[in-house]
Structures are given as structure tokens and as C-alpha cells.
Length: 328
Image (cartoon, rainbow, N blue to C red; front, side, top):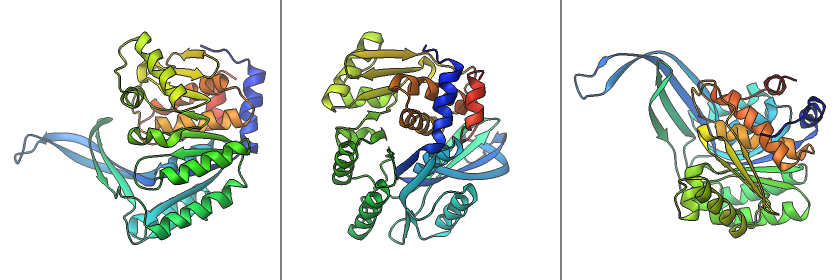
């Protein structure tokens, strides 16, 4: 575990407020139906959930932007939603959170992505997805491209939130990474397993253990195989850093120059990992943009993840909660 003294930590976290971050990716809504199991259905051997409450929150790339905002940064979100009732709900929640809408385009060609989770007694029972996963239409892709590079000029760091719903294309990402890195800007990617070849040249990607294993084509069974996978992906994708999130085993950071750091999990109790990856990449990007080393940023992100998984549902971590988690 890395140790950040209170003065260094506070300096980095206070620097979050100066960071403008372009968030590009798949926007969605996370819907939760909360209740309790009252009986088994007579129609099939499945539980019947007595729903008591419904909540809807921003998800996907919008949750990343929400995390950046809550931590004190200035996110600029670019993404696509449907011209439907759910799209209207998405825009309302963006406005309520104080997030800009000028990077969002609505289309009648695809629905707003909605993930519905049924939770009973704080346990995730089932999830239902309503979405389109096909590539964007040419006019939509052109709009996303043009808006992305307009906003890029205003931002010092970029987060790509790839959920495989069609917004992220190899041509868009290749141009974005090339132009951003040439300008000295950090590009962090929360990856989709099938798209790893898109991310060559990024500053850092943050796969979980399963995604990293599948991308490298070999199982991660122990510390030796983990390191083999980590160094293989770092080299093959020409990354500055690779942060593998490992659930209850913590995180492992691989950096150019053969630097490796393992960060044990900081979570005392895990209630829900939904959105934890969004929290990690948001915090890591803000920290590095604010002057932290990649290792310091990973330690701060590790603490943020501890806060996120200790709550049920998609949540955003505040800057004050982060400082308190370090005892600062």
C-alpha cells in the first residue's frame, strides 16, 4: 500500500477543481426496483419481489461524468441517447446534477440504454437491459466526432467509457488518442473486452481481472500469471500504464519502466460493485491530471472504490468523503 501524507493528498484532491475532463462514451440510465421476496412464483421457480421503491440514476459514461463533477472536476460529456421518454428522463437528471447537455445528441434511430436491476433485501436478483449495440449511423457518428474534437480543445484530460453500445469506434478512438497525446493530454479508458485493440497508445486502461485475462488470451490464476498478463497488455497496447482491478484482491498497477505496485482492497464490506469501475477511472484521471503520479492516483482511486462498493446502487463519491477515507 502506498502512503500519501495528508498535505500531499489534500494538494492533489484540491487540484481536482481545476481539471476539465472530456468524457466520451455510452450514456445510459440505471433503474433500480427495490423490494423484498415474499414468495416463489406459482408460474415458474423464481422469486416474486414485492417492489417498494423505484430509483433512476445516470449510468455508463454519464455516471463517469457525474463522478468527475461530484469530486470537484469539470466534466464535458459527449454521447448519444434516444429521442424517447427515457431520453427525456436522462436529460432531466443531467440538468438536475448540474451537468452540461451540449455534448449530448438525441436520435430516433436507437433507444436510450436502460439497465433495470431488481434488488431484494440488498441483494441483486436480476437485471434487464433495453439497448441497441449497433454502430452509430453516419450522421450520428459525424456529430459525435465533431463535438468530441471541439470539446477536446477545452479539456486537459480525456476519459473514454466504452460499454460497447456503438459510440466508440476504432477510427474515432485512434484519432482521439493521437491528437490528445500529441497535445500532452492524458487519455484513460474503461475498456470493453472486445475492443482492446482500439486502445493502443492510451495513457492508461482499467480492465477488471476477467477482461484482462480474456484480452491477453490466458487465465489469471495466481500472481505469476497476473504479472504475465499485465506486462503483455502494457507492451502490446503501447500504454503508459495498466490498472487491473481485482475485486476483493485489490488493484495491480503496471507502468512503463517495469514499475509494478499492488494495492490491497480497502473495502471493509462490499454491498454492490455497480459503477465501481466508473468511480475508479474518474478518480484516477482527476488525480493524475491534478499532478499525482500514476501510483498515487491509483491509491486515491482505490480509496474511492472502497466508498463506492460500500453502498448499494450507482453512486458518486464526494471529495470530502475521499479526504475522510484517508483520515485527512
